Image 1 (cartoon, rainbow, N blue to C red):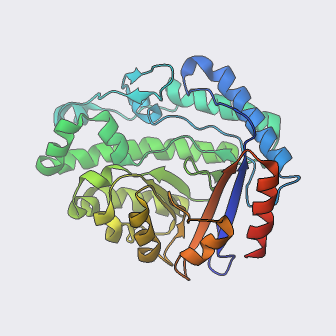
Image 2: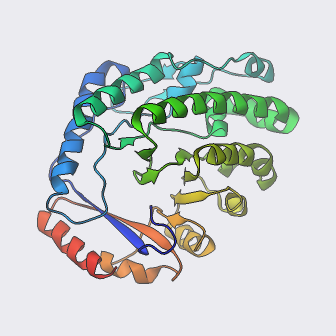
Length: 325
């Protein structure tokens, strides 16, 4: 992503002329998922030859949120036409204490290594791989642990919650260390799909349900530990987390922030985090895309994300946005 002194904005133009529907991330359709990911990469690669933008072709290994909870032993609910999700495995502090860190041989993780291995074999070295869906340690804890009990435990036995978060972080770092060893530190974030030269990315949504004090005590240490280990972090958050923005400013080496909230909240985020991060939020601007630069604070660096089925529209957007650099 852009660093201090680089261009003020990047722009990505998704030329999507047909219904190129991706398969749902289910274990029994791994061959279809692999072929879709390969076709998607080939489309991106071909588009780069005629459309000027900041897109980076990549190998897409996106998953649902369930894979790390499933590795711990959680059952997963799967229904055609919907994303899979893990069901609670833990219902009290005693059960949380008994959990053990799984190995990378867990089927939900091994499937993704197998998929990425085959895609990188086809593409050859140097092609970025899109990260699987990484939730924060506390978000995964909230998937594993029935929330009706978890939030009581946050108040009554926070040390047990912190211990579970540490076990989850151990699994995450084992996974990420091996992922980066195989496929390189340059990668594409799980969401949104931005390029990372080192660092790591995750979703942090449970912060909307806790106080700033709980964020500082239980969430922030995990985020900083991951950022320190990998040299930076990008965060996606679709929770109503306005009360945590001061805390997010305490995350060390926060590179990019993606907030999915109503337009008024997003406008405030551009102002609040103006020079602190690269912005890629759920609202980029109103009207013609080449005017969006003027709708944000002068110090903000941000990503413009556009979709079209019209090739001529894609070319027109590219030309006008390039002229606004």
